[in-house]
Length: 433
Image (cartoon, rainbow, N blue to C red; front, top):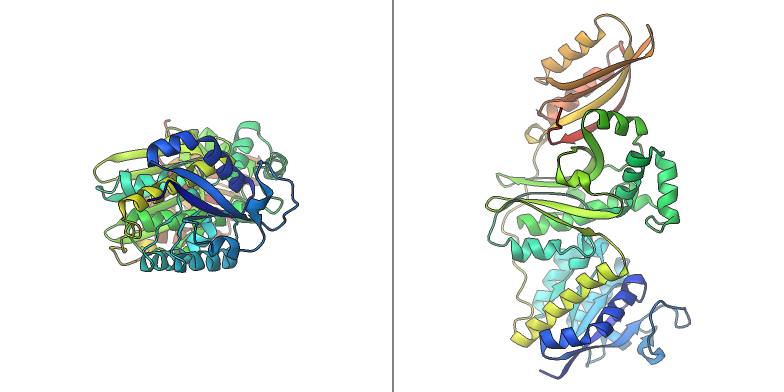
C-alpha cells in the first residue's frame, strides 16, 4: 500500500469543513494508527468564491463532480453534501469507480441504504455512515461491533437535538412552543424551516437506520409511525411534572418474537429514566440487549467537529480494511424477515387530558368505559375549570394494548359528558410517587 491514502470530499459546508480540520490537525495520530498519511486531494463545492470556515488551497476546489469521482488517485469519497438524488448518483458512480464511501447523509441512508450497500458489496467497496445518526455518538458502531454477540431487543432514544432543545426550554423555563422554537432558530439549533425536525421526520429517518442494524431486519422508512411536537402545550408538561414525568420526543424500536414495532412520538418519561436527564441539544440512545442488559450512548448529536469525528473514524476504518485487503466484506444480509406488530400486541401506558362536564357521576362513567376495555388507571388528577360547569381530568393508565386504548378513546370522544379530549401521549417508565 502507498505512503498515503487520498480522500475526495463532496461538499464543504459546516461538516465538510470539520472533516478538513480534523484530517489536517490529527495527521500525526492518523499516521500512527494507519502507517500512512491521509490527504484531502479534491473537494466538490457549488461556489468557488464562497467564504469558508476553513483554510484550503483554491486548486483543491472544483465544481465538477468528475474531478473527484473519476480521479484514479482518490481512494475514499466523503459525502457531506446532503440531499438525496444527486448524492445517490454520485455515490453509485464512486462505487463503480471502485472508491470507498463514507457518508453523513441520514436522508439518503434511510431511503436508499440497502441499495447503496448492495452496490458497495458488488464492487468490493466499503460503505460506512456512522455520522448519519446522532452526530458524534458512535451508536452504529456500538450496535454493529460492540454488541455484535448480543441479541438486541429494544432501542429507544432522543435522536433529534432541535426538538430536545425546544422541549427542554418549555419544561425548564415555562416558555411556549412558539417562543422555544424561535429561540432555537436564533441559536442555530433549528433551521429556518423546522418542519423535518418538529414533525419527527428527521428522527424517523434515524430510527429506520437504527432498526435495520439493531435487529438485522429490512426496515423501511414508511414502517416508522411518526408524530411530532408541534401540538404539545405547556399544560401537558406541567401536569406531567406533577405526576413525575418529563416530555421527550422519543424514537422507539422493539423487536420481540421476530415482530417489529417502530415509531417516533412525544413520550412522557419517568424522571428516574436516564433519558429524562438528557437536556437541550444533546442526543442519547438507550439500547436493551438480551445479555448485556441496559446501555446508553450519550453525546452531541450534531455540530461540525462532533459529526466530523464520526466521519473521520469511518475513514480510518476504511483505510484499515484497505490495508488488510478486506474491503467490501463488512455487510451482512438481514437475518430476519420484517413483520410489523399489530396494535393488539403493542403495549404501553398512556397519559390522557380531557375536559368534561363538572357533574356527579361523570368520572364514574369514564372509569367504567375504560374498565370495559380492560384498562385501569394508575394516576389521576382532577381540577375544576369553571366550578359546576367544566372539569379538567388527567390520568395515566396501567399497561394496555394500543388496540384497547384506541377503542377506549373512540368511545370516550362520543360521550356527551366529555367536552374535549385535549391530548394523549405514551408513557414510559414508572414515576416515583
